[in-house]
Image (tube, rainbow, N blue to C red; front, side, top):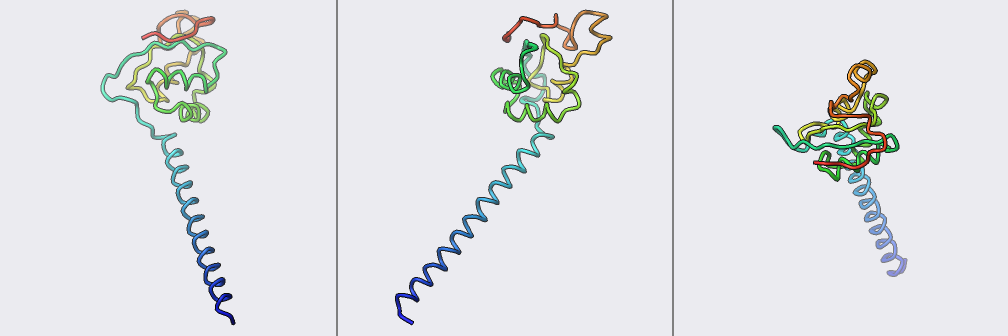
Length: 146
């Protein structure tokens, strides 16, 4: 065997080992990122502890869960809008969240915020307010005040 063939064979083997190591590293990092994100869906703590800061938000009927997440992230109620959207779709409250004006706190978890944004038919007919207790259905209202 010529020395050139031996060098090429050794070089080819080294390249295959390096590619295999890189593939394992990429798969490992991806799996860890997916696990971390999945774990956060169910265990994400509130933005702040204690009393937190109260923020009044107006959720309209035309807003999607993604839009609500972006609004909440811009106002400091959640850390990650995409994570809030996933939490919404996996929540037991997703069918009950209604538009309106809500007073939410940075000390609330995403699940607590969604629970505060639910309106039962009894509450709606008795008082004309939402579960947040701060006003009307919010139709035609957009934006946020603090």
